[in-house]
Structure formats: structure tokens, C-alpha cells
Image 1: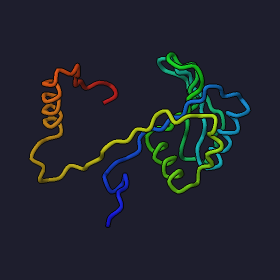
Image 2 (image 1 turned 120 degrees about the horizontal axis):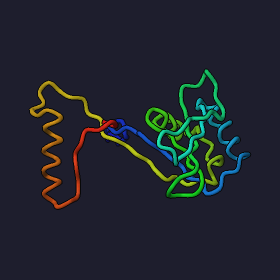
Image 3 (image 1 turned 180 degrees about the horizontal axis):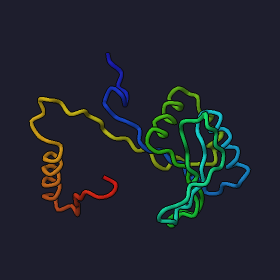
Image 4 (image 1 turned 30 degrees about the vertical axis):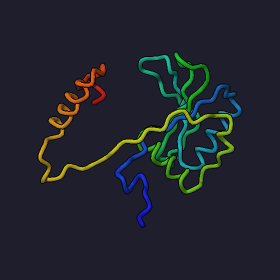
Length: 155
């Protein structure tokens, strides 16, 4: 019997965030220091600015991954800890391998966990990606759901 995994199903962890209602500077430094030791540089940014400035908290040139502490949110008071893209995949890998000391995050709540399906195009595919997406959009629009499909700066 084959065990199911994200990898076997072509699923990729893309985003993980934790929310902290109150995160004092001492606790923030403890979390940043812990993450630094397992390969993550820590940065602070505001959640209210359109183009927030990424300010370093703890950074090492040896580290390949990063985490962002986001404060000043419009919709939520407190601080969020964001891992995105390959940073989220690495954090998930560490959690799967039981490397993460979860007591460090005990004051936080897992608030977001995004995955996506990744499939490479094959030579024998009968439809182009763009045509596939347009067909999906047509089907969704027939359900009277308020949905749109636009190409924008994010993709």
C-alpha cells in the first residue's frame, strides 16, 4: 500500500503563517533567534504600507531562507509570522521531520496554510494551459458565482 503525501500528489506547500495576539520584543527576538539557528533570516515589515520596507531583525549570510514578522495589520491587531514560497516549503519540511520546537510558537495560532497543485505540461496534452483556464472560468461563471479571470502584475 502506497502512503499518500503532498509530494506523491504533486502538492507543494506555498504559504504558512502564524498569528500572535501579543508579541513583545523579547519573545520576538527569541523566535527570530531560534529561526536564525535553523536557517531563517528574520525581517520586520508593516502590514499597512502598499510597498512595505523589509527591515532586518536577525540576519546571517549563511541562511538561505527567510521569515517576515508583519505588524500594523488593517484587519487584525497583533503580529503575524509569514513564510512564503520556498521558505514555507522548508519550514513544513522541518515540521515534518520533527525539527521544529513548537514551544517557541506556543503563543501563536496557525492562521494560514496554503498548498498548490503542480503538474508539468506533457507533450501529449490536448489543451493549452490558457485554454484550460478559460474553460474553467466559463464553467465557474455558469454557477452564478462572482468570479473573474485577469492577468495582472501578480500573474
